[in-house]
Image 1 (tube, rainbow, N blue to C red):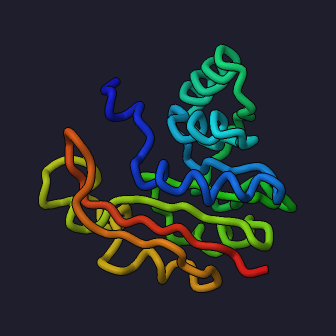
Image 2: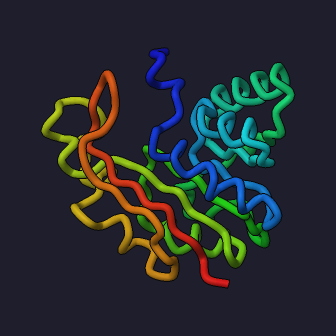
Length: 182
């Protein structure tokens, strides 16, 4: 695994102050957490984290690293793309973090998972990623220009960026930090 795959996204890291402020509202959900690079970042910042992914092996690694570092991370295996929806019926989160994952039908559910005043930090690939020859190529997994803020009409956008980002391997990414009113 590359060092880059282990490093938190600079966009997510830049939102840590905003995310820390949500701690009294409830835990933070790292949705489609993969091997937990952001779950660890958030837990090290003092947040309680639910790390959700469908990959059992990745979640075992998340749990093992959380134990070794004494981090407040609760792994949860679930398929965010399931037709049955997320297994979080009445859950409310102070924050939701999503990176490098896009399943448009889930946008409304993500808004509903946020407690009033909660924050969403979302970053994923744009359609221009195809130009680079690496990463996702299927349009279903790529945002159109300006699309990400429009996916969350019930949230107030506090930060938004789109463009080429990342070292040493650049990617075309869009990111938002948005707050649920209340």
